[in-house]
Image (tube, rainbow, N blue to C red; front, side, top):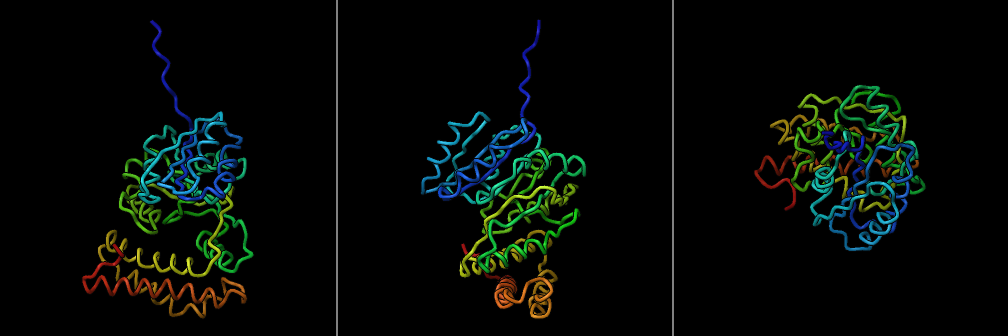
Length: 298
């Protein structure tokens, strides 16, 4: 008797968590579906959107010939929402993308090729800017490029906006934290992946196009949040965030001197303001921790 043919899943599961991006989501979906790679599925997680996101997803899933799944969650945050997407994924690899980005046609194929060429468990791809006309977007893009660089290298942490992870490595460490972190959920995941022996590589051979924040006040709030969350997670991961906070404080104190080496003169004051907000929030979070007070707002 001939046995049943086993269900062989796709090579890659693309997972996109989205929240209230109906105005730009179609551009994201179109680029994800237009790939020169056959063995992939698409999973969008609508994390409790209150705009027309559900309608946009329904329209595109109805016209796609690919496996296109929509998972619904109740505004649980990007990390847990991505976990919900991976829970239904069948691919050998999981490829995460932010909902405000677009990708080139060779994105999936090149990410897999470069990951297998490096023999790594995690591959972070390049990140380009949708626009740098606004000073805040320009600053944030340059800040990201300062972190990633232009050469292939091993990373301690990979931003989740364009990262390919072996599904087995992801599930072995429990995925993203189920705690709703206001920032740095990718950093926390990267730490646990490296602790488990995973190798994280950066290769800008293929880059997504990312829409950076363009307004000052939301960007400042994000910087302050990231600063505080860093202390919160350093305490969890390392036991004491003292050295981590000390480094950030020194970096902030000397920022007027190193900023000119990384940012053009037109961005000097903005960069100083952003770095000061980040450093002061980190120091303030450490002080709250020492005093036994909550580091993060409940």
